[in-house]
Amino acid sequence: MSKNNRLVYSTETGRIKATETQATAPSSDGIVRIARSTKGRGGKAVSVISGLGLPSDELKTLAKALKQVCGVGGAVKEWDIEIQGDMRDKLKAELEKRGFTVKLAGG
Image (cartoon, rainbow, N blue to C red; front, side, top):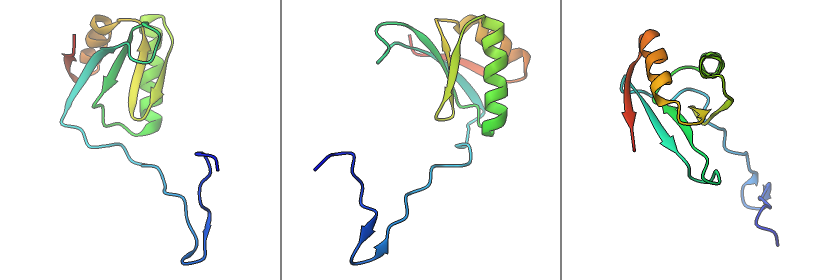
């Protein structure tokens, strides 16, 4: 039996509903953290912005603007914004300009 198979019907309880993903943004402490990460990326660095506490559509809009400021690519993954390269200083300046309280996290 494959690991990817999931049970969709049980004789005890009938149909089993899939668990829904979190639709609202996790609560934020008011501080945006920018960290540099290389894990699982073949040694390439990305700047991970977390703690924004914005709805998904605003998060995508902010990610697009930050990518344009830095001139690189990126993505929104699980309520975090990932920007390619070590762009922490540029990102900090831009987020502070937009009214966020920012801390550089990690090394």
